[in-house]
Image (cartoon, rainbow, N blue to C red; front, side):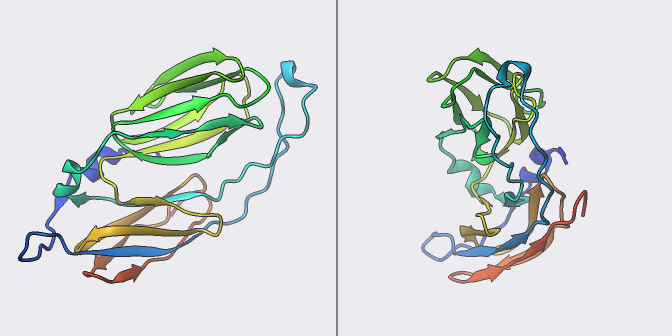
Length: 222
């Protein structure tokens, strides 16, 4: 699951360009169907035995992305800033997709101390334990998949996917997604889900049109 995204993304594709030098673009959209997963009761840490019930963990979110992208896309990336909150003893959102150079803020909006850390080769970090109302941040400069955990609350986990191009989307609550502004051409479209990885598929984008691509995730693999 933690296969190297860097090797997949660095292969550029030829894109169609109009006579005026403006890339022809279309869109990719569809739905990712994820099987329902059983909700396990959370086990709070000893220090949190007096806390209330933990909300069920939603594992339906997926990320749909191009395995490779036009070389021109690499020149258009700009550093950004997004947030992964810590609230209700969960990371929110649980799945976050960003481009390289993005800084992620980890505010503690809860009523207890939290920590955010990762051992992922793409971006290992440990923000230490910090009190409610505080925020700590991490900049992600390499592509890859970064699982995030809290060393105080073992049931807290999240994922950050870092890309070197902007052609990706996180599915909504119904599993739907849309990737706009894709230069005309043929690409390999892939899906990441913590439940399982469906087989990638080829899609051809035509100028001014939207191509439909649906996926079914099966538990544990393709």
